[in-house]
Amino acid sequence: MKAAAKTQKSKRQEEQTNFISWRFALLCGCILLALVFLLGRAAWLQIIAPDMLVRQGDMRSLRVQEVSTSRGMITDRSGRPLAVSVPVKAIWADPKEVHDAGGISVGDRWKALSTALNIPLDQLSARINANPKGRFIYLARQVNPDMADYIKKLKLPGIHLREESRRYYPSGEVTAHLIGFTNVDSQGIEGVEKSFDKWLTGQPGERIVRKDRYGRVIEDISSTDSQAAHNLALSIDERLQALVYRELNNAVAFNKAESGSAVLVDVNTGEVLAMANSPSYNPNNLAGTPKDAMRNRTITDVFEPGSTVKPMVVMTALQRGIVNENTVLNTVPYRINGHEIKDVARYSELTLTGVLQKSSNVGVSKLALAMPSSALVDTYSRFGLGKATNLGLVGERSGLYPQKQRWSDIERATFSFGYG
Image 1 (cartoon, helix red, strand yellow):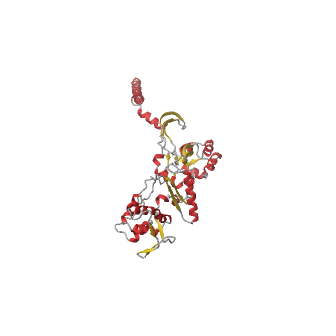
Image 2 (cartoon, helix red, strand yellow):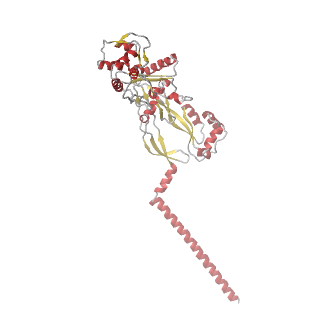
Image 3 (cartoon, one colour):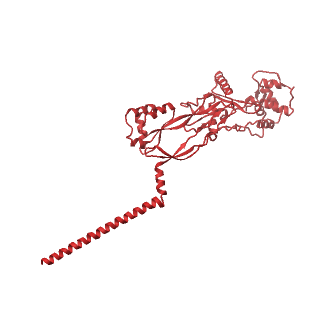
């Protein structure tokens, strides 16, 4: 019995040993297979197809930085600056970096930033914490260099500076309606700034860099040069512009008018030497300026030409042989279809020169009635009335021009002195 029991126990031990050996061998085999798989995968990623890892690594470390370029300068005909770009700074925050560094505290440095930006600390905190995983948010734009340097010296985690520019207009309200202005992103909004925005805007470049986990640039990978913007020289003479603006302001005040507009043109070349409106606004400080005040009335509003057309009437009458340079006209007031045609002062007779000197409605109306109605329509059209000037200014209106087959006598008369 003892021998049989001993034999049975020995068999169990042998079976147990075999089971452990088999399980150990299986475990070792699995480990070996896993190791082979890992080595194979590593070899595949490192040697045969490393591009995916390189791309993912680059996505974590490579950054594309924009290389900004300044907006082109606007000058008058003699090169005097009318619009220039001055360097300023933008203050921005990296919410994730701020959060990882412990967030915004009530310490002196954060209070100093709050005071400098004129943003209450609780509002500053709310803006940054609105998206704690975000990587970019503007805190202030177009900050002057001195203030930017002060903020930089605070050395707050997650608070950074970036270069940008701000538009400055040396002539201020004198050229405001003509030159217009840009927005905070240097995009033209009004005037020449808007009309020639593409010409004045350069093409920014790119710089690809590698950064470490602290955001520091450790390697320049590549760069694309920026394309400089074009400058723009206008036909405007800044000195004449200032003179026209001053006299226009005086005239508006003297006549107690709501507004006034003036355009000075070189009669030999057709160049616009000055273009002004009154009242004006300060393009360097738009705070509180109503939108209607920014309208360039010289091109957007429709005006009756008035007595400016009278020389055209006299010229047409001379060309058609209706009168000659020695003709004397009866300029006593008269009536047409119940409407009285008269001048500011009473003149019994006027020469053609006198008609123009005295701006006689009676004189030019009699010349118009002596010609076919199509004569003045053709002359006015050839002088450009009812047509765009093609100055290139956005918002220009071509005016209203009558298209009639039949004209009454009173219509022909008023048409000759620019009304009707």
